[in-house]
Image (cartoon, rainbow, N blue to C red; front, side, top):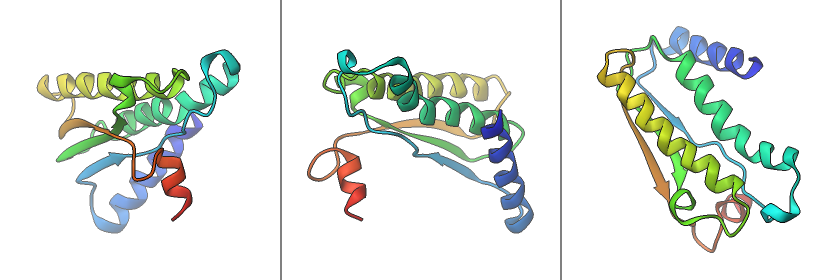
Length: 135
């Protein structure tokens, strides 16, 4: 709930400062670092949290906005797997499914703005975390 309240505050600030929000890009995520056999439930949940909780908070907080688009940054791991961790692949598969759900809501008139999930491959020399750490 705290995350949703934070997102609502950010949206209100953006609307107050610039007069509106025209689109949302959700690019949060944590890289899986251990195989499923090596991790505990808390570690698994931590990887899921950024994508699952963030996606729901963004969608619920923006439900009344006249958006042009919503774009979720997913990963090819959603379809290809993540080398045995399962958490990162599952989180990204959720984004693909949620994009379908939100697009159905838009079609039914309950949301505005076309919804897509982009399934990015590995970035540069490997995982996106190593790429981002170099920046």
